[in-house]
Image (cartoon, rainbow, N blue to C red; front, side, top):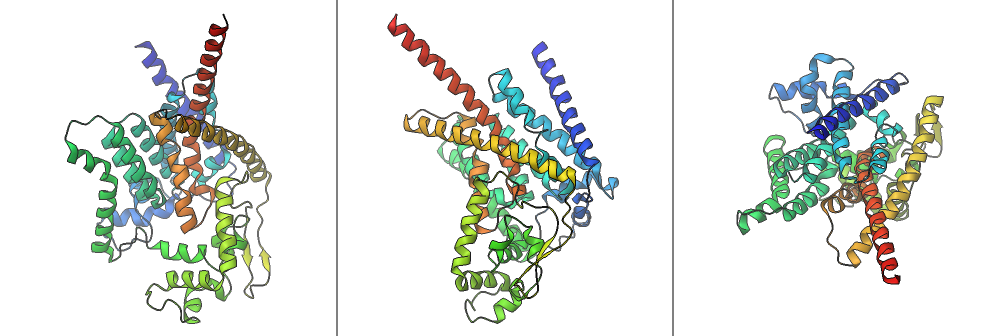
Length: 422
C-alpha cells in the first residue's frame, strides 16, 4: 500500500518537474505556439460542419476542451504534456533497476527539441500524449484502451497506421482470450477494420479515401525535383516555395506521362520521379540516412532558406541563429548520440534472443515498432525529426530494460561458470 502511495506521489512530482522544464523553455520561444491553428477545425467539429479532411481531426478534437484558452492555448499544451509525463513515468516502470529507471525518466525533460516542438508545433504534444497512452495501454494488456488510443494517435498523425496495425495484432496474439477462434481473429485484425471504416467514412463524407487530403501536397513536395537539396539541411516547406518545378500544375502540364491520374499533385510527383531518377535515388537514400543515423535534428538548421525562382541558387533569409536555439541543438545532438548507442545495443540483444529462439517479452515486442515502422511513411513522404522523435522516446525504456536483462544474464553466466569450476 505504501509503495502504491509513494509511486502515485512520485509520478505527480515527476510530471510537475517536466512541465516546469517546459515552462522554463517557453520563456525562450521566438515563434508563437501553433496549436491554435486547430481552432477553426475544432469549432467545425462541434458544429458538425465537416467540410474538409485536409488534416486529420485528432489534434482539433483534443483542443475542444480548451477553446476558452485562446489565442495561444498554452494551458492545453501544459495539460497534455503533464499527462504525457505521467504516462511516460508509468512506461518506465518496466525498467527493473532503480538507477536505470532514473536514466530513463531523464530522457523526457532533457530532450530539448521535443520540448521545443511540443511548445511550437501544432500537434506534437497531442501526438506525444496519444502515443504514450497507446504504448502504456498495450504494455498493461488493456486491449480496449490500446485500441482507442492507437486510433486517436493515427487520427492525429496518420503515419502511425502501420505501427498501429502491427502492435494491435501482436497485443491480441499475446492475450489469453476465451472467446473462440473467430473472435480472436477479429481482435487481431481490429486495427485494419478500423482503418477500413475510416476510409469508408472519408469517402462518404469527403468523397475521398485519403486519410488526409494534404497527402497529395506532401507526396509531391517529397518527390519534387529539388527535394534532395532541401532536407536534411533546410525546412522542405519553406525551401520549395519558388520556381516552376515546385508548381504541380506546371509540372503536370509540361508532360504527357501518367495522364490517367486525375490528382495533379500525385501525377506531378510521379512525373518528377520518372524524369529525375538520379535525384530520386539520392533523395530516398537521404531519407534512410536522415531517419536512422543523424545526430542533428532534421532539418538541421533553423531559419528560412529558399530555392530561388530561377532554381540556380539558394536564398538565405532570417537564420534565427540565437544562442538558445544553438545550445538546444547541441544538447539534442548529444542526446541523439547516446540514443544511437543504446539502439545499436538493443538490436544486438533482440537479434540474439531471436537467434536463440527465446520468446520476446511484451516490451521487447512492442516498444521499438513505432520507430522501425516510421521509415515506411518516411520513404513514401519525407523524414523530419518531429515525425519520429516521440517514437524515439518510447524506445528508451526498452533500451534500459535490455541493459538490465543483459546484466542479469551476464551475472547468471558468471555464477554458472564459477560454480562449475568449484
